[in-house]
Image 1 (tube, rainbow, N blue to C red):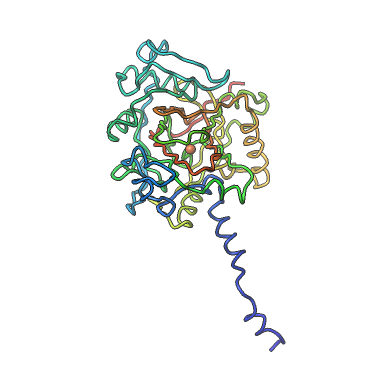
Image 2: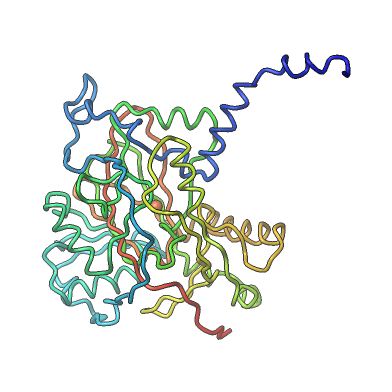
Amino acid sequence: MAPGLIETVVDHPVDTKAEAVHARDQIDSTNKEAFAQSAKTTDYEAELKGSAKHPPAKYPHYLPYWDDVTYPPLEPFEAVQPGNDADPSFPNLLAMANIKDMTANIGAEVTGVQLSKLNKAGKDELALFVAQRKVVAFRDQDFADLPIQAALDFAQYYGPSHIHQASGAPKGFPRVHLVHRSANDTTSADFFQERTNSITWHSDVTFEMQPPSTTFLYVLDNPTAGGDTLFANLAVAYQRLSPEFQKRLHGLKAVHSGHEQAAASKARGSIVRRTPVSNVHPVVRTHPVTGEKALFVNPQFTRRIVGFKKEESDYLLKFLYDHIALCADLQCRIKWEPKTVVVWDNRVTAHSAILDWQDGQRRHLARLTPQAERPFETPFEG
Ligand SMILES: [Fe+2]
């Protein structure tokens, strides 16, 4: 026996600190998952009754629950394109509206319209208006005060609302995705112990075969300052590239994966509602109504350019991610006010949460996420 072999085996304690870091890295494999919530991080008692420091949740029927119901794989379906039927002068949507541009390149703030009262023509116009402006903040809306089913019915005019594989949902409404951090939550302070930056540019659930289109997010509770949301115009991000570079991107496809999000959910002891999937989408996609082309890659879900070696793929994707993140002139910042509904076209935008408030105030929003066509790219026109 080689000297010292037994000692080597016995005296090799598990480095628990390294193990903990490894477990944490698995959960953090993509930034966004590092501050995802679960039943364990939700203080239902404080949410329902309030605490010494914080009032109860304003919308307790929207509190998130993580049940263990699982769902079959999503089935392909024929997507609707309400924007194709819209009157481009928007008589039903904007006749009484006050519209303020947020920036030159993206975003509008609208008052004087009640989304829930729109007729069919108004709903069609909403799809086109949002496709053009990319993201629109509608103020003074009654969405949060409607029965949940009524809000869901409104959104499902644009397509079946996505059932998220890992997020909490209001009891009985798996098609509502919740963004929720309990009062007294310490996620932000904990996060910045390990990281310098919380920005996580992405378009929602791009790993699905038919990712979302006209998407709705409405506020229930928000910190008095902070918790804004960033949006970026990916059509202008594409247009900004040289024709030669655009030509090189034409025809490229990339793998988008939901596996890491599912694994991160499992690693923190939470749920996975559906067998996770990957799908291949064009790097540049064409909007089916406006005909605009837009970049369609994001660091949260895009993994690899098909046919490129890893270093080549990483190099190109990093350039595109940096391009989107650094072009502040293509971005806007939504400030949430009570009764705000933000609507964006997920096909031509990216967004990021901003994790900045550290005083334990509650943040609670609901998202309705209609799925649409499988992404496609039209011929290169130069
Ligand atoms: Fe998102």
